[in-house]
Image 1 (tube, one colour):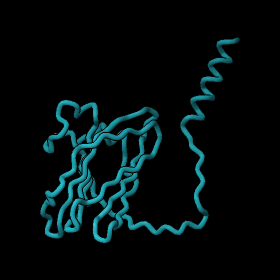
Image 2 (cartoon, rainbow, N blue to C red):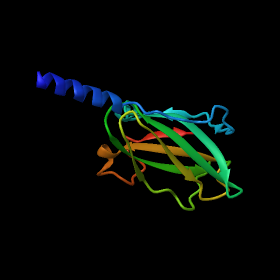
Image 3 (tube, one colour):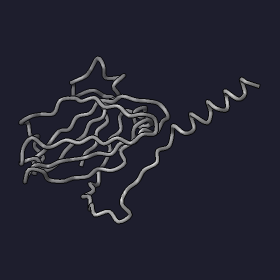
Image 4 (cartoon, one colour):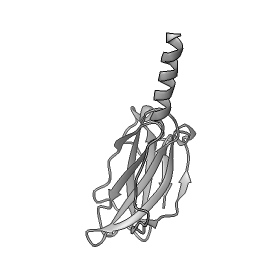
Length: 154
């Protein structure tokens, strides 16, 4: 009997962990500049875990491109991943000044996180985001030719 009650309490406790109550304005004043993106998926395992929900573009400090990406963990488990942004000018050339290093982020089960970056130069007009499973990348971190990388191009 006690075992049944404990199991029920554990089940109810875990069920409450997967949802979050939120509050936001009924009439929001924000007007995001959503970016239409294409995805190249080379790691279906990571794609089954973390998905891109929205990409928003803005300008900061007058002329620097800022990108914010909303990512959702589709599983019930905690997950770590690496990411980096690359920046391109209007002709498609890489803006090499201040190239972005790999960064690590984490996301709890069913959680949404936001990652963002600001271009290193006002010449940057486009971006690429690479997502890499941190478990698969531990020995390859920092290499741009990793076949497990998932890219997101504007």
